[in-house]
Image 1 (spheres, rainbow, N blue to C red):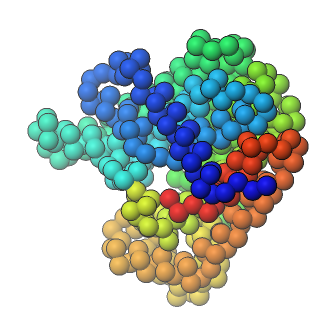
Image 2: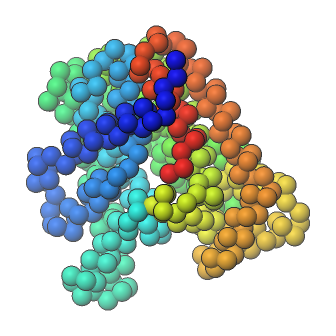
Image 3: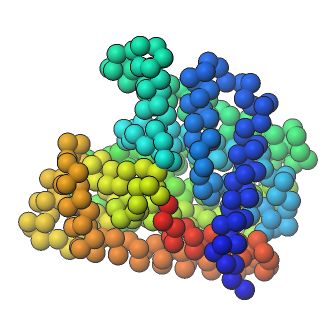
Amino acid sequence: MKTKSIDFLAELEKRERWIASYLKSKEFEEWFYPAHLKEAVYSYVNRSGKRLRPAVLLLSCGAVGGKEEEAVPAAAAVEMFHTWTLVHDDLIDNDERRRGGLTVHAQSSKLAQQQMNYPENQAKDYGRHIAILAGDVQQGWAVSLLCDCSLKGDLDPRVTLTLIRMLESYVLNTLVSGETLDIQFSKQAIESLEPERILDMLWRKTGALYEYAAKAGAMIGLNSTHADDRRIVALSNFTSRCGTAFQLQDDILGIIGDEKQLGKPVGSDIREGKRTTIIYYAFKNATLEQKARLKSVLGNSEATREQIDQIRQLLIELGGVSETKRLAEQIIQKARTELDVLEDSSYKQLLLAWADFMIARNF
């Protein structure tokens, strides 16, 4: 039995509505002040998104026999944790667009100019400051949301405490280490990086939080702190691998995607000098002249749109995109076998459909 794509997307959208509704409840809206900070905190929440991390948490809960509604606060927590990382990541990368609108720092800068008459330089500083503060608030909100699993539900408080400790130690430090490596890699010679190091960095940035989402959902579904349960381990390994493949697909879309569908600029990774597997494989296949062209544009913040488009085409011609696609597919195939330990169910089928979606999506 294979879940049809349209069925999966409908299930995904249903859970997206659950999470958005929970986060937008009046109880939470009263917490945030002043208006510019509140707007920054809710900026990405108010825009449509895939909500893949909370979805996989809910599906993992159901896959072990749990009730999804009991895991909604935790799913909302994972979404909010992911959101603060986006706000700070956009700031680090100096990105201007996210989910079809301005990034938090860009939007806050615009408000400073329009409503407070700040000159451009001061407005940019203001935007950065608000983005940092909004991310801090969102990170704290994520922890508070996890508490709701026990305060508003029947989850054993020991499970909640275990999940909070795991999120704020293992996951947080793993994710930030990945972001740090990403920053460091962008200044290192392309020749010095091996695919294994790039994949490790991608897993830290993306795979670790997906791993946590499944683990949290399964632990809530079983109401257990025993993370070594074979079902929990299987789901964790499954989503950990899928998370890495997701990032590989993200890198691919950053080269060949459609900006309107993505809601963010295509080619920005080139301008920022990101060291992706696409860059690695293309550089490996390049001539000396092509390597020189790649080096002259990668990481060049002043690169023109024409130069970016030329490098995008070169990355395709040199096999960087196709090799990365092949790698992502291999990872997903290996990930799917992790679920063999689970009994067949609609949840298991949705998880397998989720894995396929991770590398088939175009947004």
